[in-house]
Image (cartoon, rainbow, N blue to C red; front, top):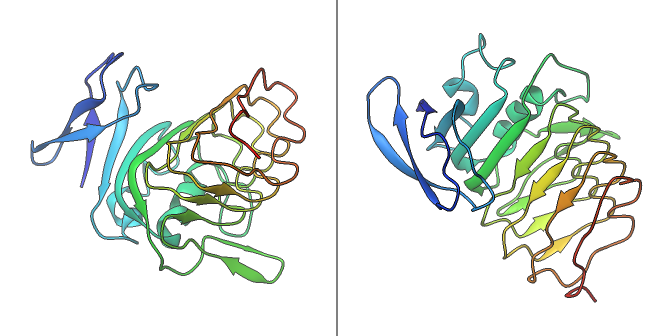
Amino acid sequence: GTGLITAGNIEGQATVTASYISTGKTVSVDCPVSVVDVSDFKFVNVAVAGTLSKLISEDEILDIKKLIVLGNLNSNDIRVLRKMAGRDEYGNLTAGSLEILNMFNTKIVSGGEGYYYRDNYWRNVSDNNLGQDVFRECNTLKKVVLPSSLRNLGHYAFYGCQNLEEVVISDGLVGTDYYVFQNCRKLTTVNIPSSVTTLYGYTFYGCSNLKSIDLSTID
């Protein structure tokens, strides 16, 4: 189901309470401590992978600016998130306006029909892995909180996201492929957890505003 989180400032807390508008049911949502304000976020619980498009109406899908999503996401759901963030499944521009995407409580699962078609083949996610070009050139995004269970980021995952400023990665990510953040020119903050021991080439190439990054655990 969907709901609106109205808890306001939560600095120093790791859990907030969300209410479903339609039923009044409340649930607890874990958030990384870097999230300090959840007011006016759209809240979506994708209990069954592949159903995100049924949980957000066509009237609002392009207007949502702040989204907290939890549950199970497959390639069909990623296709919807891309549309909300400015790109369709063929890389064409959309009128989406999503700026903040929190996927901390999601689990990436195999399945779906592909989220992006490029170079004659469809990109797909797999269990606990976000695949190649997953948010490529999704230019409305400013902040992304990745799933806590994520293990790998594919090639060009955030390539050319011109307005992306911050990415939050949980401890447990094992690896990133080539060019993950290439040409994210407004990127200033990204944490590389100690679980990552190898970064492949050109990960931050063209990130001209990146202020600092701790690479002490990287081989």
